[in-house]
Length: 179
Image (cartoon, rainbow, N blue to C red; front, side, top):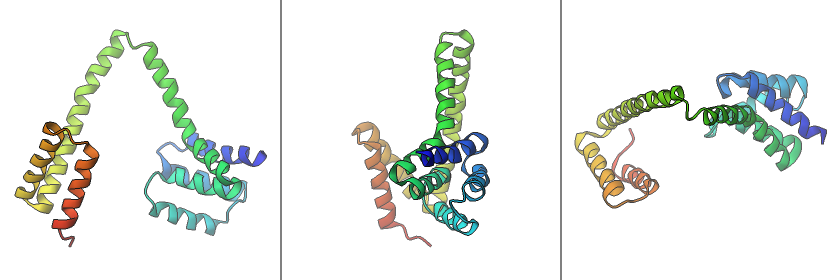
């Protein structure tokens, strides 16, 4: 049972102190698993880090899952991943609780009204940049064609967005050569 507590502490502490996400917590995790608990050597940690960087997804949870599984099996992997996300999860619950408590406050309502246009502008900028990148990579005719077909599929025929994305990926795989 002590091994699960150690796994929890080894990843919970870097989760609290590693402000800035996975890359910021890597040295803290290394300190815990190499120097404090001696679960890995520096060489093993660097190999595990290289493998974690090669796989998709958040690096901290991949490291926690691997080391937790190595030290405590499937439950150890669960404990490690939970300990990694627990600080953010706890903070989100607390902040959402505070926001919910003051949801009828005029200041909170004004704040959320001001955030909506900001998010809309950021999404618009992102869509414009995606369009520009698509235009530069595949040409105006292809880009407009994909936009129109995607719009019709989503809005007129109510096709699920996942199928539209899969279709666009298939179209790109069939008709565009990567250079």
